Length: 295
Image (cartoon, rainbow, N blue to C red; front, side, top):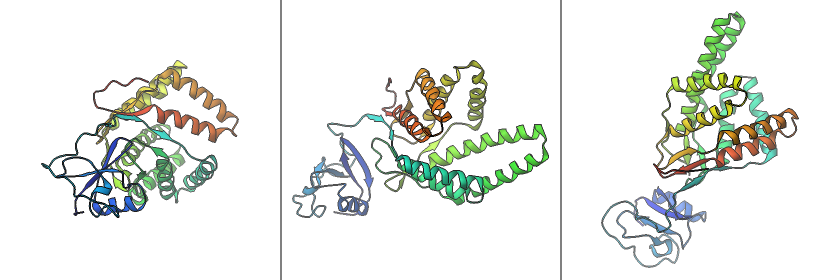
């Protein structure tokens, strides 16, 4: 094996590129086996890992080389699919309690928030993205986190109503910054995904205000929230496939009503939260760009 980048096939989809050292680590961990198809620039086609000299102990036969270029199309090329999420109830409960306490005491907030985000992101499974993770660091949000805390406390002490409304608007800007920071720090197998969120702050504020106003329609808010989720997904940039939310307003409505009833009785909250999260994830899909995807 030379010092170049490699792809491997899993579940009919190519993974990579990976540096040679990282591919060797995947082999050591059993992720890549002797029968796994691999490819590197210059090879004429996909070959079993055991056929590449030096890749798998006991391997044989040199790789067949051809013109440089991208990896050849696989016969069973993956076209996308839904996300999924799962986590243990007890783990969710104690981690959520730690998060709430950390935010209440303010000082540990950034570190607890990053710690919790790393965990919840690791529970999400994305087609073609093994070991989804989060690479954000607490120190990157410390300035605006503590700045916002000082402003909120100061404004609360003044009791000036118009100033409080202005701060509420500022909070929406902070939520928008958090979304951009969250998306930009997503990773896979320890490598940054290079994603970004392109939705403007004014659009985010507009959707937030519309969501609040829509409550007066009694049920129309569900369709507004679904449209907001679709806008959010459309503005995730840097993916080879398009991120789409395919859930309907009616589905969101009845599930939200069930969730509210469950939250009212307190005890079912963790189970209801997981149930709702799993539905939201299942309705978020990766699809070929320009493809029409139905629920």
